[in-house]
Amino acid sequence: MEDLRQRLTQPSVESKQEASGKVISYLAITLIGGLVATILIFLTWKGIALFTGNHYSLWEFLSGIKWRPSDHVFGALPMIATSFSVTLLSGIIALPLALVVAIAITEILPSTAYKFLQPTIELLVGIPSVVYGYVGLTVIVPFLRRFFGGTGFGILAATCVLFLMILPTMTSMTIDSFRAVPKQYRNASAGLGATRWQTISRVIIPSAKSGILTAMVFGMARAFGEALAVQMVIGNTTVMPTGLMHSAATLTSVLTTGIGNTVMGTISNNALWSLALILLVMSLAFNLLMRLVSRKGVK
Image 1 (cartoon, rainbow, N blue to C red):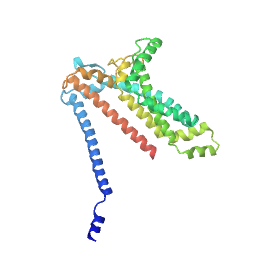
Image 2: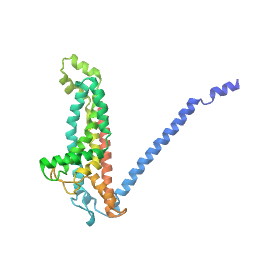
Image 3: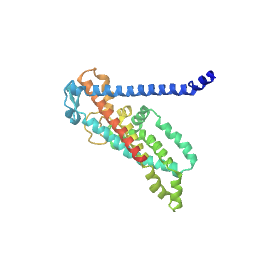
Image 4: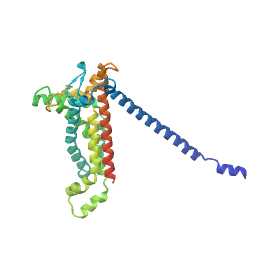
């Protein structure tokens, strides 16, 4: 009788597995959280060294228009303006096309088209950025040089490359948003006598609005942080952008070209870390914006 009581009261195999699973999960969460916190602390510490250690003016850094590391002049405004310019232009161009493609795949074309096109789009999402940069260098830049003159390098070339990069991502996310709209909405709209276009424009798109905005923000976040592809076609001139065909430089292109040419701890190296801190802040801002848009859509 006592043996039976011990068997009934002792922990089962399932409870032991659940306890070990919780321990592993908590350890994984702690490890990931520690890594993220370490990265944030390290980038913040290195990013503010220019202002705390070298006593460089924060206002001059953010508002200055000249970037001359040899003269210890660090004005980040041209790179910030160029980064936002190419990001906004590529996002504005890519969003309408992503909407059109997503509408065609989910609402107009037969289901067999979705089975063929969706894997193709996802394949384009996974193409390395250097491939897009090489396409821009060998196709887009010569095309722009032939029809618009100049060198072909500049903001317009970078915008075209980023547009090609983020279009598959935005299209895939928009397709998922449209497919998440309940079928009952379409049936109810058809039952009220609405045409296909009326159903798309007045029912499906408004219902998937939060997903569409999330796709746009996600695509722009990827465009803002892209380095290699942009560096290959933008010209890498640290001046204020004055035209689409003029060479310029983004935050990422300056970082990738300059980080290997500076000595750790010098004022030039600290200035690059400050640019990296700006990139980190903007990435966090994009992530926060995506969460706000998604939360608004859920409500």
